[in-house]
Image 1 (cartoon, one colour):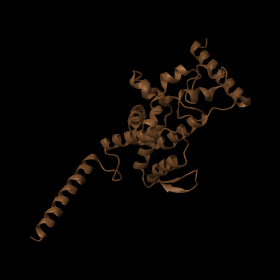
Image 2 (cartoon, one colour; image 1 turned 60 degrees about the horizontal axis):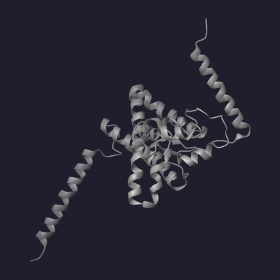
Image 3 (spheres, one colour; image 1 turned 180 degrees about the vertical axis):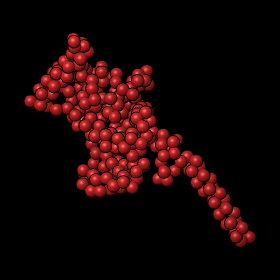
Image 4 (cartoon, helix red, strand yellow; image 1 turned 135 degrees about the horizontal axis):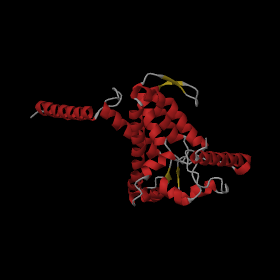
Length: 269
């Protein structure tokens, strides 16, 4: 029975990947984790790797050619000029082995229980919507920042890649589904309740995290996840719904009017 040509081609690509990784391990250096970088920084990151990464567009690496960067990573200026596919394609690219490893480990650890109770279809829809929504936020927020802070004008030309926004949405869903579940952290090795995981991660990100992290992407994934969960009524009592917030605001205004009326009534003539 002849072997299909598609299998032969796939095996050839796999062998090329293994050879490239072996040469990289033997002294070619290693790619850093790039989550928020300019095209020039990306070019510098892959400089010196020769042809090992030509045409290699997979989860763990980015290709050498700058044109691929501009096509598939989220760049705010490029997106609003017509590259509307970028909020989807950026989440399938990563800046290095550790980048994709951490994201996929978190997706496996926190996404598996959700997929078991939600079903594969609903979980996949939620994951993709969080990732694409985070990509749209990444493509939009820099323009508002540039207007308010002119010295940040360069942000509109920065590239972002990685599934971190979608993974953060999954973390939110897990923490709100099992808020009292105890998690053992690796760094630092302490147990915490699941509901405190995201606040701790964001505190570490904004205080001691690396400078090349897309804060808008992480926050955007959480925001989109919250909106989706609120729509389905799965956030419990930890986050108020829009209806609840409207009720609280109306109650505040009513109490304020009552206090004002009470002060007027007791005010001496």
